[in-house]
Image (tube, rainbow, N blue to C red; front, side):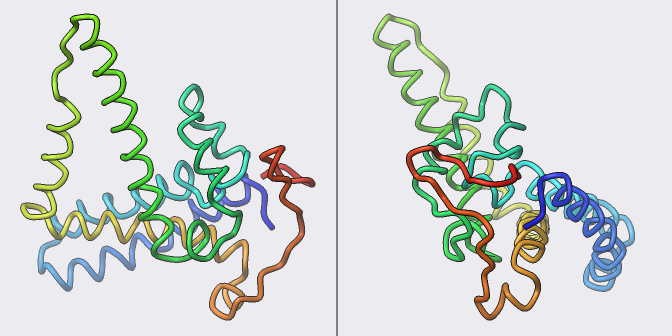
Length: 195
């Protein structure tokens, strides 16, 4: 199982490899070099963001959650609930990266709502910025459908690069998962090398 630095390298190299392929596919689809260029940047950016900040290894105490600095607490409940290398919840190819986005937005929404409620109890009214953000993001699905799809595809491939490295390409499809380390649920970390 590769360590965080190796996963970062795989994420960056796979992003570089996918960039010209993405550009070519988008240029063929949109018939516009300008759109293909912008969407390729969006795709590669989402790929790198997913692989480096929203990695499948957010399900364990690792170098990845430490990247969140003072906001690493956002991922603590996720670590407690999601079993490491779960194909359904953390290391699968499509559903897990989308779940991590939803989880992130759900936690930040709950924190913002709770914070707003507490401030409201002492007479401080907080603007409904989060509702405005939700409205903007949901409207993007209708007004910028192609860009949303490109972003999500890049986000999925960034996570998939990690999973392929952990399981091996064949293992990711047929279920041969190597178990090099053992989970200690009360310690919330893995024995062995820190990822």
